[in-house]
Length: 480
Image 1 (cartoon, rainbow, N blue to C red):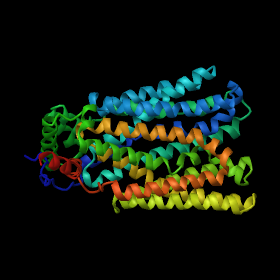
Image 2 (image 1 turned 180 degrees about the vertical axis):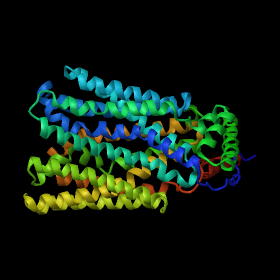
Image 3 (image 1 turned 45 degrees about the horizontal axis):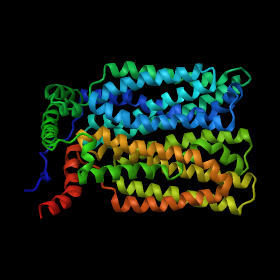
Image 4 (image 1 turned 90 degrees about the vertical axis):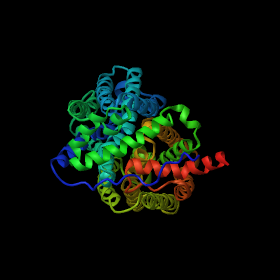
C-alpha cells in the first residue's frame, strides 16, 4: 500500500483585509528585530576592531579570533535554536534569544581582556545563529501563503538594515569621538536597545499556530489564527494544518532518526545545499573585508570607509527590490538569476584587478562591481535562501531541518571568512575571485537541477508535494 499523501489538500479561502492585517504587520515588525540584531552584531565589528585592537592589545591571530568566534557561536546556535524552537515553541525561543543578545552585547561592551571578548562574541553568536533559524520559521508559520514571501523576507531587510546602522554608527562615533579611550565600547553597546525591544515585544506576541497544532493545542492555534486571519480563513487553515499534523504523528516524524527516511534526508540535503549556495558567492569576503578590497584597489583608507557605507545602502535598497520581486517571480528562477549576476560581477572584479593599473580608475570600477554584486546578492540570493529554508521542511522537522542547514551555512561562512585573507595573500585577489567564480558555476547547476519551487503554496500543500516528489520513488521501489 502506498503511503504517499494525497496531492490535493482542502481549499483554503483567500485572505481578506481587516483588523487582523494590522496585527500580522505588528507581529512581523517585532519578530524581525531579531534580524536587526543579527545584522548589527555581524556588521559592527568592521568598524570597532581597529579601536579594539589598540585597547585590548590584539595580535593578528587574536584579531581573527575575535572576529570569527561569533561565526562559530552562530553555527552552534543555529542547530540548538532549531531544536529548542521545535520543543519549546518559536515565541519562547525568540524570548530566550533576546536575553542572550543582551547578555552577549553587555559582555562584549564591558570585556576587560581578549579572552572575555572572544567568549562574549561566541555567546552573541549563539543568539545570531538561533535568530537566523527561528525568526524566519516563526514568520513563515504565521504568514498566509500568498503573503509569506514578502513577510519572511522582511527579516532579510532588517538584517541588511542592521548592517547599515552598524556601518553608520561606527563612522559617526569614530569620527566624533575617535580620540577617546574605549570608543569601540559605545559602538557595541547600541545593540542592547533592539534586544530590549525584541524581548518586551515578544512577550505580547502569539505563538506559531502551526507549532501549537503539532502539540495538539488546536483551540490555542485557532485563537492565534483568528488574530492574524479572517475567521473563515482561520477555520479552514486550521483544518489543513491539523490534517497534516495528524499524518506526521502517524509517521512519527520529528527527530534525528527521521534522517534515515529517504525523502526527509534528501530534503535536508537540499536545504544544506541552499545554505552553501548563499555563502559560496563570497558575499562575506566583501562584507567582512570590503574596506581592504577597496583600499587594495586604489582608494585611500577614509574613502574606503565611506564606500563601505555605500555598500550598506545598496544592500538595503536591493532587499526592498527583492521583497517586491518575491511577490511576482518564482523562487528558483530568482535564485538562479542572482547567482548568474554575482558570478559575473566576481569574474569582472578578477579581470579588472589583473588588467587595470592600481589607482582611482580601478578603484571606482571595483566599487561599481561590488555594488553590482551586492545588488544581486541582497536582492535575490539572500532573501530567497532564508525564505526557502523556512518553507521546505516538514512541520515536525522544521526547526531541526532549518537548524542543520543553517549550521552548515554558518560553518561555510566561517571557513570563507577565515581563509579569504590567506587566499588573497597566497594567490592574489584576482585568482581568489576566480575561485569563487568556479564555485558560483557549480551553485547555478545545483539550483537548476535540484532545488524545488515553493512559491504560492501553503506550507502544508508544499510538504505534501515534496513528500510525493522525493518520497514516491523510494516508496515505489520498496513496495515493488
